[in-house]
Length: 109
Image 1 (cartoon, rainbow, N blue to C red):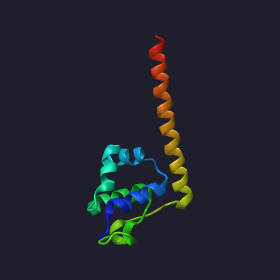
Image 2: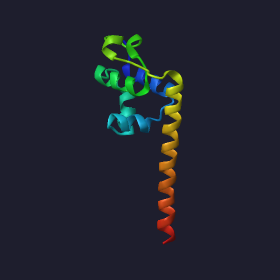
Image 3: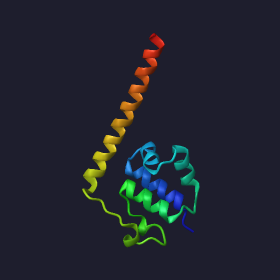
Image 4: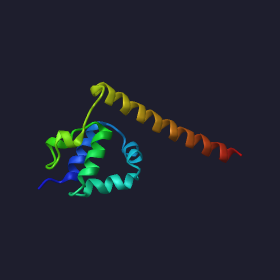
Protein backbone atom coordinates (compact mmCIF):
# COMPACT_ATOMS: atom_id res chain seq x y z
CA UNK A 1 0.00 0.00 0.00
CA UNK A 2 1.27 3.47 -0.86
CA UNK A 3 2.22 5.80 1.98
CA UNK A 4 1.08 9.20 0.74
CA UNK A 5 2.92 11.09 3.46
CA UNK A 6 6.25 9.55 2.46
CA UNK A 7 5.59 10.26 -1.22
CA UNK A 8 4.81 13.90 -0.39
CA UNK A 9 7.89 14.21 1.83
CA UNK A 10 10.18 12.95 -0.92
CA UNK A 11 8.66 15.37 -3.46
CA UNK A 12 8.89 18.32 -1.06
CA UNK A 13 12.50 17.60 -0.17
CA UNK A 14 13.40 17.24 -3.86
CA UNK A 15 11.68 20.54 -4.65
CA UNK A 16 14.13 22.56 -2.55
CA UNK A 17 11.29 24.74 -1.29
CA UNK A 18 11.61 25.34 2.47
CA UNK A 19 9.08 23.60 4.71
CA UNK A 20 8.27 26.91 6.38
CA UNK A 21 7.25 28.37 3.06
CA UNK A 22 5.05 25.40 2.20
CA UNK A 23 3.42 25.46 5.64
CA UNK A 24 2.70 29.17 5.29
CA UNK A 25 1.13 28.71 1.84
CA UNK A 26 -1.11 25.94 3.18
CA UNK A 27 -1.98 28.02 6.23
CA UNK A 28 -0.55 25.47 8.65
CA UNK A 29 2.48 25.09 10.93
CA UNK A 30 5.76 23.31 10.18
CA UNK A 31 4.72 20.73 12.78
CA UNK A 32 1.62 20.02 10.68
CA UNK A 33 3.88 19.35 7.67
CA UNK A 34 5.97 16.89 9.69
CA UNK A 35 2.79 15.13 10.86
CA UNK A 36 1.64 15.04 7.23
CA UNK A 37 4.79 13.10 6.32
CA UNK A 38 3.80 10.41 8.86
CA UNK A 39 0.23 10.08 7.58
CA UNK A 40 -0.19 7.22 5.08
CA UNK A 41 -3.70 8.38 4.15
CA UNK A 42 -3.29 12.06 3.33
CA UNK A 43 -6.44 13.33 1.62
CA UNK A 44 -6.29 13.78 -2.13
CA UNK A 45 -7.23 17.45 -1.71
CA UNK A 46 -4.13 18.05 0.41
CA UNK A 47 -1.98 16.11 -2.08
CA UNK A 48 -3.26 18.31 -4.91
CA UNK A 49 -2.71 21.48 -2.87
CA UNK A 50 0.88 20.51 -2.02
CA UNK A 51 1.49 19.54 -5.65
CA UNK A 52 0.43 22.97 -6.83
CA UNK A 53 2.71 24.67 -4.31
CA UNK A 54 5.80 22.66 -5.23
CA UNK A 55 4.92 22.29 -8.92
CA UNK A 56 4.78 18.50 -8.72
CA UNK A 57 2.34 16.15 -10.43
CA UNK A 58 1.53 13.30 -8.04
CA UNK A 59 -0.77 11.50 -10.49
CA UNK A 60 1.93 8.96 -11.41
CA UNK A 61 2.70 8.16 -7.77
CA UNK A 62 -0.64 8.24 -5.96
CA UNK A 63 -3.62 6.13 -7.00
CA UNK A 64 -6.84 8.03 -7.47
CA UNK A 65 -5.22 11.10 -8.98
CA UNK A 66 -5.16 11.92 -12.65
CA UNK A 67 -3.49 14.83 -14.34
CA UNK A 68 -6.97 16.20 -15.17
CA UNK A 69 -8.02 16.18 -11.50
CA UNK A 70 -4.70 17.56 -10.33
CA UNK A 71 -4.78 20.51 -12.74
CA UNK A 72 -1.02 20.57 -12.44
CA UNK A 73 0.62 23.29 -14.47
CA UNK A 74 4.19 24.49 -14.21
CA UNK A 75 4.03 27.79 -16.10
CA UNK A 76 7.71 28.54 -16.45
CA UNK A 77 9.44 25.18 -16.12
CA UNK A 78 12.31 24.16 -13.86
CA UNK A 79 14.02 27.55 -14.05
CA UNK A 80 10.95 29.19 -12.48
CA UNK A 81 10.84 26.56 -9.73
CA UNK A 82 14.53 27.03 -8.94
CA UNK A 83 14.23 30.83 -8.88
CA UNK A 84 11.22 30.61 -6.57
CA UNK A 85 13.15 28.33 -4.25
CA UNK A 86 16.06 30.76 -4.00
CA UNK A 87 13.69 33.70 -3.46
CA UNK A 88 11.95 31.84 -0.63
CA UNK A 89 15.30 31.02 1.00
CA UNK A 90 16.42 34.64 0.64
CA UNK A 91 13.25 35.98 2.25
CA UNK A 92 13.52 33.53 5.13
CA UNK A 93 17.11 34.59 5.76
CA UNK A 94 16.10 38.25 5.65
CA UNK A 95 13.31 37.59 8.17
CA UNK A 96 15.77 35.85 10.51
CA UNK A 97 18.25 38.71 10.08
CA UNK A 98 15.58 41.25 10.97
CA UNK A 99 14.66 39.28 14.10
CA UNK A 100 18.29 39.23 15.18
CA UNK A 101 18.63 42.97 14.58
CA UNK A 102 15.56 43.63 16.72
CA UNK A 103 16.90 41.38 19.46
CA UNK A 104 20.30 43.12 19.48
CA UNK A 105 18.58 46.51 19.46
CA UNK A 106 16.47 45.58 22.51
CA UNK A 107 19.50 44.25 24.37
CA UNK A 108 21.50 47.43 23.80
CA UNK A 109 18.66 49.66 25.08
